[in-house]
Image 1: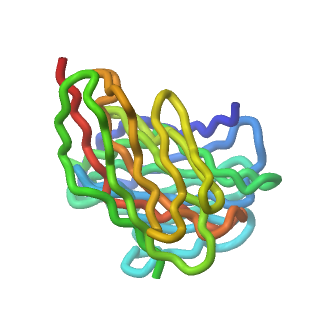
Image 2: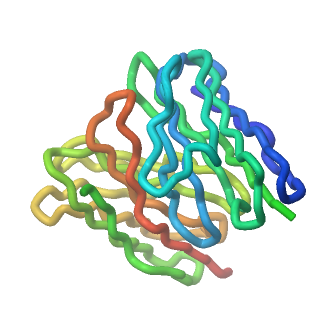
Length: 115
Length: 114
């Protein structure tokens, strides 16, 4: 079945550093990928829609300079949390949309802890 | 805008009990409806889905029927197991096209005790 790989699954970093999270569709092309953030015991909040070869579309309230998204190929989108602070600690989940069918597949998630 | 409302948790049940998790939605048109499950420390897994009114999605003993008249998609299982303990998310998708995201409910945590 279709697989979306997200890496790293866990990362701990110091405040002020930047962290990059990768989302790869392993056996299908994904023109569009979505990035969600999940707060503890809360739902998934859509952060941005990432389209291959163009700028990401950010949801209201999400700082685009803070959360940099790059979607340089049909199988890879990256989310970079810049100058991370403890309040950025969260579970980040990506979802890739199969270009051919529109079906969505989720990555395993990345837990970021900022000390 | 589009939204999903699901029952507040946590829900605690004994093994073999009947499960219902209510979910209602607000959306124009005819969205597709989904239930996702998240086991502790893991990402989301699609549990079941329905794409049009009166469709019934089913998987692993779970069922949900797309009710247009009540804008609902309640999740049911006749006999839960300890291994069903997880967080369950109801979601809708306006269109099954590439650039349309899922809209999630807040999730319902289920704990099943032996």
